Amino acid sequence: MEFHVENMTCGGCARGVTRAIQALDANAKVIADPPSRKVTVETTATQEQVAEALTEAGFPPR
Image 1: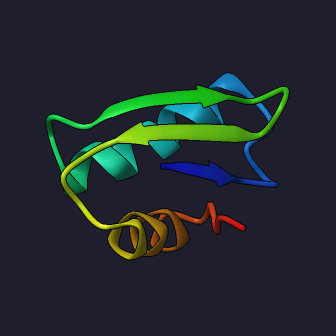
Image 2: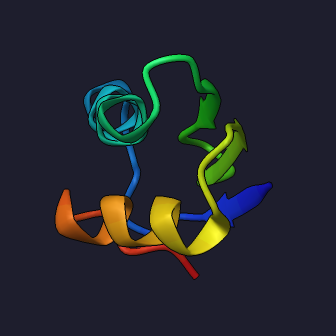
């Protein structure tokens, strides 16, 4: 699944996004690309669960 995270602008943000998703699913594969603000996720969690985790971490996806 793929998300656009407008306020992910740096490596620190990318780490925060990755931590939020991996707190939900420790085995999730996360590719966060700050320049494009795109996050690609392979996880057993639902898209809604991942979106909620990102929002709670301060990185609401579109």
